[in-house]
Length: 65
Image 1 (cartoon, helix red, strand yellow):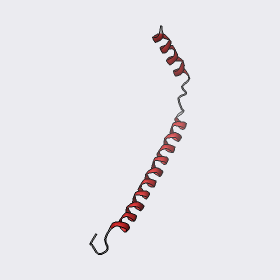
Image 2 (cartoon, one colour):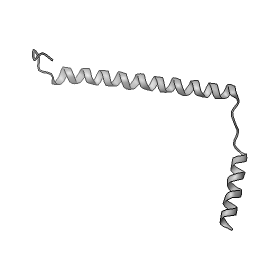
Image 3 (cartoon, rainbow, N blue to C red):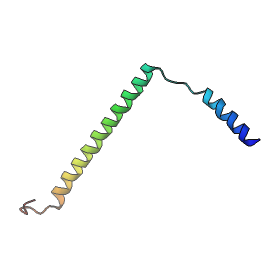
Image 4 (cartoon, one colour):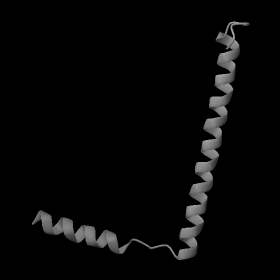
């Protein structure tokens, strides 16, 4: 039966899963948080630069903006 084969395959694949140690998990978490922080800085920097460039390009001088 196809359902039984599927369940056996799922169980076989789940047996291959390796659970990380506490130290590995901490390293992975810190790595992900550092990457996210760098991406936040990159997006913030690009947003700031493009906003600054658009203000220089499109704002009329002496308009009070």
